[in-house]
Image (cartoon, rainbow, N blue to C red; front, side):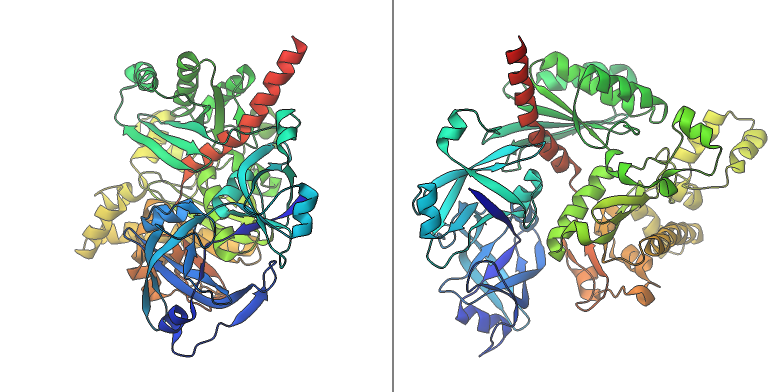
Length: 583
């Protein structure tokens, strides 16, 4: 039996008493639209959730009022708030987490109220009879497609006043590549035993590995819960020791049995539009693009080959920084140079920070409660490296970085776009090689080059406040370049629905966010001073009635990698079954 998908965004159910505390005595919820389940509706009212670690604002209240107050969030939300709610069915609140709920008129300390909702199917008794199930029984749901998987432990909720619908939270929906209105199939135990569907293990352990130019970062995820089991960073590794260090790190995981190891690869050129299982052909392509990412692709490959050596029977997955941007049209990615250089040598814009832009796009989709396929977004990844991505209907349409990460905006130590003639001019006056000039543009320019103080915005802003003129100029140039690209992409997308700030500076500097947004009031950007300056974590920082919604969304590139590896596990099993049949 097929069933329609309903993605459950974070929301709150309130008692009448708590509603009046939060909104005022005698207050009634304002109806906005019906939900699929009979008698339930989305209200206009929103509240803030305040946890030990952070806060989430603009959380939708659902009606009508209930006999208990309940807060339903995702695992990602729980990390932001700093709570550890249990996975429960609605109404099963004994021992659940507590949370502070803040409304316009008051606050409620909701005791035993927060849960991660157990995925479930609403159905009528007639639906249950056709399936041969009873109320509170568990079944499985098959997600079809190229990355087919099976979601187990799905609760059946049988009631007369029900519409057939499969509910899961935003994290699970993203991991399964599901959206509202998709169709999935309820699968019987006998079908699973017969092997008629691709079954994804209920629990899988995924190692996410990021082998940088001089660092090794890793996280171990338990999937599909998306919980972090272990994480660490090893920094300042000499190039001569890199291979031995990564192999030793991997050998230290002997107590783990990984289902997949996911590797970040900086440059995949035009060969990869999505994450892929590593093969000899894939490794050859990574080597081919070393000329475009000489500091990263070689080490990315060392990580892959070391993992193959230490874990020869484990799925290896390559996740590419450039993949998200392979949807750009030629008018966005081609340079105005002889076309033959693109045809012969692949010289074009590729873009970077793809995993970050993709993650925050998916989160914005949930925050705005609008499908990404209908959204126009600007994603501003602002850290030591800076890139802006124009996202049109869920796909990268243009981005500021180019053939390499040197292009685009002013960054911590990178120049961004300059007149190309400057390179030969510096070569002549400094008696330097091309490599020497590129080194200057990569490591001695940007905010560091202008300020003469640091490539770290925090140091430069502190010096600017103390009156340092060059630091003030560096900040002005930094924000002006971002301002220019936002204006350019507003025009290219014919306006946007939302602007996202992410990464170290984008997430943590309210002053710079204000400087960047200043002047876009004409386009529909109106900031909320309180939300921007005095709140923290994932949130809207635009005024309630701002036509363009402005969001701060902490990025999570590693989670994107873990999800992609998890989604590829059924393909590995299918390949193994095919190989067994052939042999």
